[in-house]
Image (cartoon, rainbow, N blue to C red; front, top):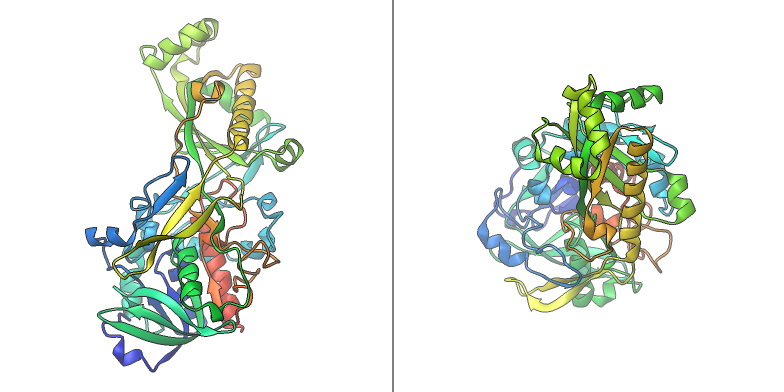
Length: 469
């Protein structure tokens, strides 16, 4: 149900008010609806993107190179999923070592996430080599705006108010009594539970503003905004390989889950033992293959550095199956307390403080990238599969900009103690009775997996938890 006027609901008490209509917000509302419980989603933007919304998405970044905060986020129904390319992958069991929950705690909600995202296939991990794992990604065709706006419009349990700016929480001693929001004037709305689901940066910002406006609401000095992370992404190199030899290598290792590379890219990551033993960050390499001819520029480049391999390749019967290799990497970032979100002295059009993001990469990031690149290169040489040319900036240890800003993680992370966490295992803010945080900001570590699938699993789990409260 779409709500145009909030005045008629000012005396209503919903089971839950959900702040934000992205994947986290919509998914928890769907689970509550399934349980017969009503919710109100408030969305600051309209059904569609507007240029005026950029004034609310400003912010400053301090430290290393980082994406413009206006371009990495969206203020509309569906949230920043409007930027999402549909890539889905899952966290490994080893990624949860420092979390207060186990992978099995959210695996139960894979069915919910797959239904929401229209996914059919299984996720798998397989052994590629002694130190590397082979895993798969899936691609969703879902755009939350397209799939769920009309659905919510017809729903009797999910209410949606667009162009409704959340301002702050009111209450005392850990009990939220109402929210203050702005939609053609200011309104105060009440609920049994309140769920902050407005994105990796906005969740921290909203809590910090609420604490500044109403310090008596907070029982503890929580590390709000700290341990902010992202997924650094970079192109790391290219090369050539003999596809027939590559297939043979995979079949000899009995990797039954491997799909033809003409249909799906190859994803490799370090296994948990190697990550632990040499103390590096989790990293995943995407191997994108493209069939090439002898006249392609990549063959000329390879001939200069590996002439014998190229000559042998084109003298063989498999010369028609020569592929160009493009390598890109998505990496985990170490959760540093010094990487954080603060309130700026600058204000948005509602006179609320804009965010400041303080972010720096560490030496560990590049060391981790170098290790996994060398692992892949050594296998290609040992098995005579192909040859790789690696980005000189990595090999020469030069500093260079990374692609960042699309996976905003941490800031309200999950844990067992208020000393280094903001929410508990059930996503309840420490010291609060009825305030929950939902979304990528609760990630304790990032792994290398694209976060949307995990966000939806956590949201479904939260909805299940609240329905039993």
